[in-house]
Image (cartoon, rainbow, N blue to C red; front, side, top):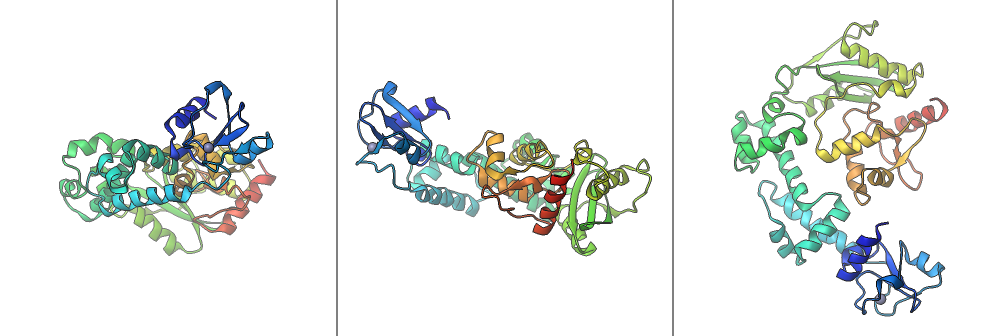
Length: 358
Ligand SMILES: [Zn+2]
């Protein structure tokens, strides 16, 4: 809990902190929400609590002006942020400024920035950039000329794109369009105790690991992610020294059959496109030891963005290399399993297996 930040929010009567904490005043025995219109107390009289319940347990009474015990209308803030997202979604190729957005939802740019970041985990500007990058990926898949795609996605010049392409796409636009110069994707499908396992890789590392019951569906998912890549199906070689793909697939199969602990997977190289945010989340997932689980909000906290819970859940759901990036170790805070792209039973099985072993 950052008291300096909290106190500043009290001084600013910052509504975006309502519901995040309450402050109590020792001299009066009353507690308030950050935005309370009442006169501000002396700093040394103030104690912060993360919930009204905690303040009441310490004997403080709720204020009669701001009703801090009533649920804050987080809905009105969430709704505002949703409206902002909708405006951006409707104009993905335009560069909308913070000022324009704030006029449209009738809130100051400062509060918009702060509330948006708290709820979404990223700033409006980063959200706009992400949307344009997604737009560009779609364009690149359908356009022949890279330069057309860049302009259609709303980038004024190609140089502005190239500046951020490396972190956002993981490779330059031209490479992505072609599915990679010299970046041929090889894949193999093997039987395992969870059905079928597909492992795909470039010369640099693993680019997809998926589980399923049908060769066709697994191949389709791979193709959708890399529509212009040169994709080859390969046979697995039992001697893992034969080629990288066999080596990686055998490591995964040995982990699934219990012959090797999951730490076996932590050194496997990965070659995927990720936004900066996804990369951060996926890195955090690789730190969760086998046999234990983490909640979505726990992951959000561990990357220093405690309010980005939904964005974390999305990053988990879009993880292209399951098992190697163990998104199955993230569960809901109520103890339920949450979702899993390759089926909830598989998630259950993996967690049960890791709880016994490792
Ligand atoms: Zn009050």
